[in-house]
Image (cartoon, rainbow, N blue to C red; front, side, top):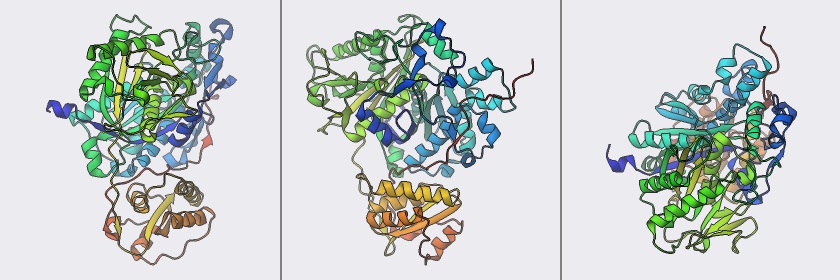
Amino acid sequence: MTKNAQLAPLAIVGMSCRVPGGDDVDEFWETLLAGRPAMGPVPAERLVGYDAEVAGEGGLTAALVSDVDTFDAGFFDVVGRMAVWMDPQQRLLLETTWRALESAGIAPSSLRGQEVGVFVGSSTSDFRDGMISTGVLDRYSLTGSIAAYLSNRVSNFFDLRGPSITVDTACSSGLSALALAASGLRAGDFDTAIVGGSNVYASGWLTGALAHMGALSPTGTCRPFSDDANGYVRGEGVLCFVVKRLDDALEAGDPVLAIIRGAAANHDGRAGGLVKTDSGSQARLLRRTLAQGDVDPASLGYLEAHAPGTKLDVEELNGLRELVREHAAGPVRFAGPGERLWIGTVKAVIGHLEGAAGTASLAKAVLVLGNGAIPTGAGILGMNGDLEIHDQPAEVAQGSVPWEPGDAPRRLGVSSFGIGGSNAHVVLEEPPAADSPDGSWGGTSMVFPISGTDDDALRRVAARLAEFVAGPTTPEPTATAWTLQTGRDHLTARAVVRASTNEELRAGLVLIAEGVDAPEETDPRVREWLGGGEIDWSKLWHHPPRRRVRLPGYPFLRTPYGIAPKTRKVAR
């Protein structure tokens, strides 16, 4: 493997999430723009084993996913009893993996038996801790609770044959998982990687330990980079990404969301101690990551910082200054709005997702590039050419600062630093402008196929897609049709809409959502598909489109299965 191949750019082609204030990436972006912290009181069932008299008040506030205990067990062929004994992280990883593949326009069944790598970052075992503290046990306890199954369950369900690894480097687990996936892709070990991060607040023991050591804010407030920062606020969520080599993604017509120019990890050694970070190690890591893509620090316009809201946040700024001073003897012109390097952190809004923190930051960074805007919520900073920090710079607007395109592609960095000294960093670049799909249909109106597990699910799929088609970012109809035809698994209940425009498509979807029978299909090939058969969709086109696009994910029917088992206590 040549050095150039080892440092080849990669592409994020799919992305999904379940985070506080975001059931999908579009909702997540709206939450970031609103900038209102999603923290609130923690329900008692999440605090089993927490003693506030010993640990203090720090664990009584967190940013939580409202329906984190729900799961579409039937969709994933999981019986009810097994679902109860599955860590909620496993349940959500299955759902977010499915949706991430849909986001990429990749039919999940098309990956069966392939050397696809699965890398999941997670550093908590609240579900298992809760079972230990309450003394409950079942035959599904092992597969439902040990960390290996966070990745192994995904590989098993989707029948993926590449490496399946759960990564724990504490708070940097998610980006460390991405760094491992990047190395494997560049080495040619596999062609596609699924990278996830998970954190679910299901027990009180870890929360108590964190609060007792002073890591959590006793006031339940997150103040990144602030002089009065007094600790972080826990957050939960699950995120997933589909990653490929850039050349492969472009050739396959994948919807490239962002380019990975560099992804690396390191450790502080003894420099930071057991629980403190070190600015010199951070600068060394950023230097190494930038070098992978031959990127100048001044070409960055934004940094999605780790910055959990502790007294050590300042070390991150010092590490940045050290890095830039190595490259420039005097003032520099950063590539962000106003020639600044803008600095923010998702933790100000959804808390610190610990093992999934890096993936939450990565998702925000991809959305910043995709939307050409930097959210201006709490903690936004601007570093000028003299490396001075301006808190809430004059250019800050309500909601976001526009980041206009320029001669060079927009670039940013994402940092994640683990409490034990293990650090990770990623450098992203905006993707090239997408070509027109240029498809030429072979008839008068295109066929838009949709499916679900049953008729109710089919109606939900139609309603969700109809709402999307009515929105401001609707793709060209040819790309939508091609994506629905070739980028989805076709389930039992099926229907088609015949349309030539987005308006016609939406009207047909609304009728299906309302339960109205579609007109009888005249093409025998499409009738065969409606009856459960297979079809070579390319045969219906004069020239199939060259790319697929991101469309809404499957609307799972979520049933509550609890945050932790409460029955079948172990005999003493």
